[in-house]
Image 1: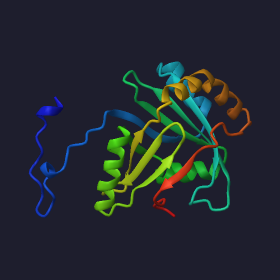
Image 2: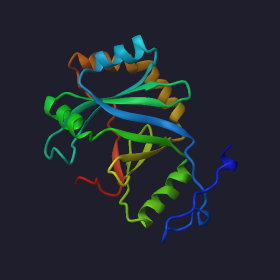
Image 3: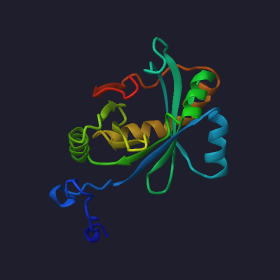
Image 4: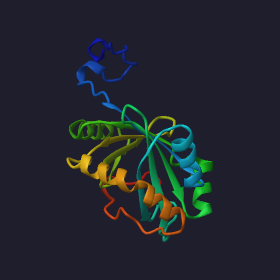
Length: 202
């Protein structure tokens, strides 16, 4: 099917697609939203819809939008049959939740790509002047950019030990969520770091 794809005629002044190798995502990785109550969200997606909770990353970090504050939050993932997921950010502080919900700051599209394609895409985005940035989340490396309407698009590449990391998360996700909802906000991911570029809101 991919081999039969035909590029559309380029717009005036655009670089023809044929001059660059086509890079297609392997599959969807995740779509991300904000939730107010992680347990209520888990009940809906896992208990009612049947989408299993497969990872729950408890994190504490400073956001550019909240300078000087260490934000406590959990990033939970629910799986579809093809390996893609829907993800939810839940915050300990009400004002951070409202910021994310009202401005739709955290909703984004995420595609799974190879590490090599991620580098190639980063270079293309740089060439186009779109200021991409990269975060190493430990469980994946994410390349981010904004589309023309301001929607965040993410391209995810997984580390060589992704299967081991994912198995550990699958075994512990429910326990992590239970203690986080109960008030224990200690992080289980202390490895996240910026590795390229600047956050667009910084």
